[in-house]
Image (cartoon, rainbow, N blue to C red; front, side):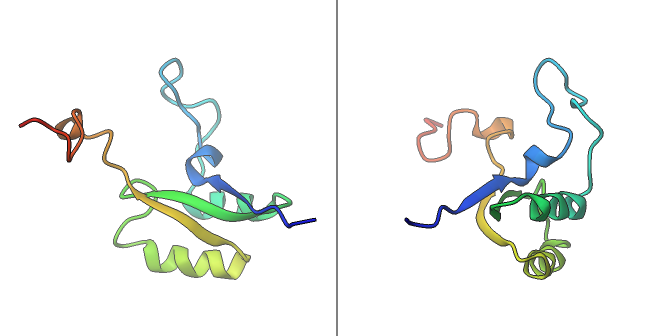
Length: 96
């Protein structure tokens, strides 16, 4: 039987807001608290996150070390572009 690798989006471990409850369904947590929470979940070994919302130029080195210390891997790191109105038509497909 093969080992199943599981990751979670770091945003999911925070307040988790949506269009109905913009302030979130629970109190928010710091990014470090979210890392520790993810590490406490059996089977979770990877974290997915976005720049510059969950990770910034000032925090990435510390968060990378925290992941190592907790036995986690950062498996996905994406730019958080889709919330910026200038990208509403896409970047490469934008007609302007």
